[in-house]
Length: 226
Image (cartoon, rainbow, N blue to C red):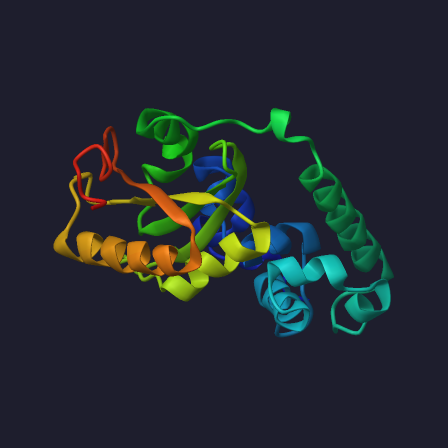
């Protein structure tokens, strides 16, 4: 049986969470923490990936049954029950009234919300803040994690979550491990492509905020959103 503790220390999800915050972890890594272990030849992270594949992604977990969970090798009754409890708790949290949700009114508030978990990451993370029509935060979604020197995001991945959550607007955020918060040419081109996709779907992109070690850059404040 392969356990998380057998991974190199800097790759262990628990250590990453403790050092960088929960938002720095992928969906697989978060699930791996809950699963704790895999089985012979399959790590907890690989098992988490199998679970997400069977469910059709993170949101698909809300429709998965106890029996379906136990069909996955490495997930017995105890783990399946624990996962079902977590899924139910998540659904109940999503039913909280809007007045309990934070309202984001400025790029500084975005920076304050995410800087602690993003500014020291060693690769680019592309985050979407999904908002209602009063700019209240509905959800924080990690859209993609890039390589050590690049971030890759496709409009399909960004807007899929927005449509499912019925978001009226988005603030997109990514980090620059280089420490320079100024946008690259690629950042500007990606933003324009996402703006065009948002217009087709009727979803407003309110800002693109780039977070560096001790600074941030708002494309909206600098007139780059057209």
